[in-house]
Length: 94
Image 1 (cartoon, helix red, strand yellow):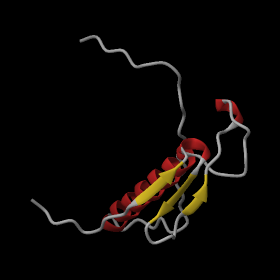
Image 2: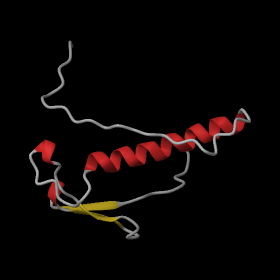
Image 3: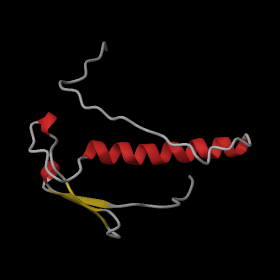
C-alpha cells in the first residue's frame, strides 16, 4: 500500500450557515446559503464554491502535468469548473 504524501484536515461548525477552518488556519471562511437554495445570500462562501475551486485546481494541475509530458505550453491556461445542485433523490434501475 502506498504511503500517504499529505493529509489535510478541516472542521465545519454550524452547517451551511456556519464556518469552516483548516487545522493550519490557511482556510478560515464563513459560510452562507445562496438565495437560490433558500438562504439569505450572505457574504460567506458555500460548499459548492469550495468544491468547484478545489476540483478546478486539481484538474488544472493534472492538465499541466500531461501538457509538460507532451511538451505543450499551457502557462497561460485556466480551468473553470461548474458545480450544480439538484433536488430529489437519485434512482437506480437495480
